[in-house]
Structures are given as C-alpha cells and as structure tokens.
Image 1 (tube, rainbow, N blue to C red):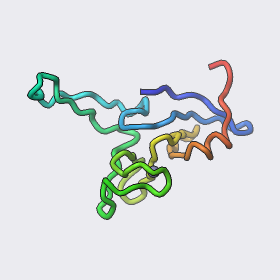
Image 2 (cartoon, rainbow, N blue to C red; image 1 turned 90 degrees about the vertical axis):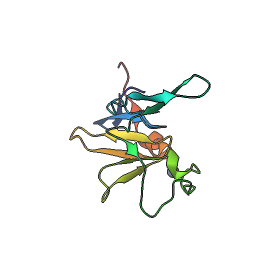
Image 3 (cartoon, protein in one colour; image 1 turned 90 degrees about the horizontal axis):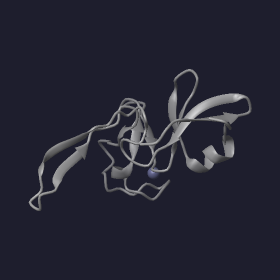
Image 4 (cartoon, rainbow, N blue to C red; image 1 turned 180 degrees about the vertical axis):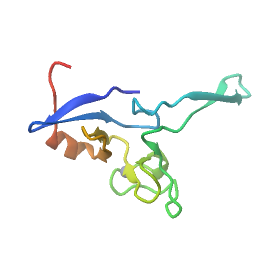
Length: 121
Ligand SMILES: [Zn+2]
C-alpha cells in the first residue's frame, strides 16, 4: 500500500497516489483473507477488492485481453466508479483526488507533465 501525497499544478492542490495493483490505494482498505492451505502447507490467501479502485471487469472485455494503452492484460487493471460510468485504471496510473473529493485515474506520463510534488510533506 502507498501513501497519498500532495501535488500542485499552478496553485491547485490535489492528492495522488500511484496505483499498480489491487489494494494499492490507501483508502482501499483491502484485507488478506485466508481461504485454506495449499498442499505444500502455505496459506492460500486472497486480497479483498479495493474500495476506491475496484478490480476491472466488463461484460464484453475478457480479462486476458491486452490493453492498447499500457500493454498489460485487463485482469491487471482496476476501475473507479460504478459500472455505467466507471473509469479504467492501468497499472502505473496515478489516482488523483481533488479538493472536492472527485477521484479519477491519470496516465503517468500525463500526470508527471501536469503536476509537481509539494515540498515539505
Ligand atoms: Zn491499460
């Protein structure tokens, strides 16, 4: 899990965190659940779905489909919002939260061109 940091564009402050996999957003509150024990004795665990960035799922896009934007398969992706207006999150995207509480993904190249980290935090 990562921590939210403050970034600036002009005088506008936002909070952001880089997302790579389920559970990365600090407000996801994902928990490790033990399902049982593997035959070699190691615990069989699963991480619960993030509350901010959910696991990507779509009726018409298979999980093994390769994303044209980032090259990772869709099973490695996340989504923000409900099914009708959900925003796709690619591994490596920044998750931006505005002062109004809007949360959305930004591709890392665009983010790094737009925002600079606020010093002294
Ligand atoms: Zn992608």
